[in-house]
Image (cartoon, rainbow, N blue to C red; front, side):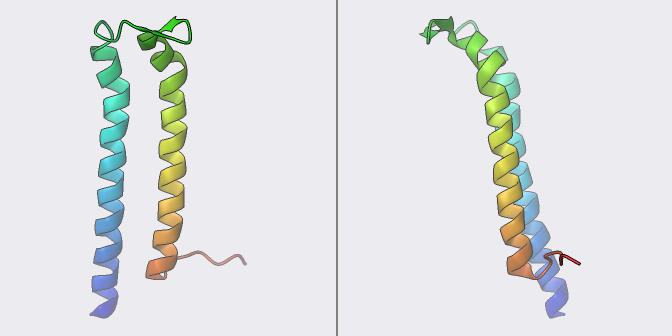
Length: 86
């Protein structure tokens, strides 16, 4: 029974993280493009909406991937699901 509750806790934390990161992804992808007209100020000499689409969004995606990988690695170790290097 302990193993089953450990798996549930693992998947609950994993699902929560995935949901939060997907909300962040959605906000960056669709939120910035939806409000692009309201984001009409210059950022390093370029319109902010252009900068977010061309530079900021891919950077946020890389950060999302890094957060997910690091958190899941720690979660695997904490719950005993880490992979051995054979």
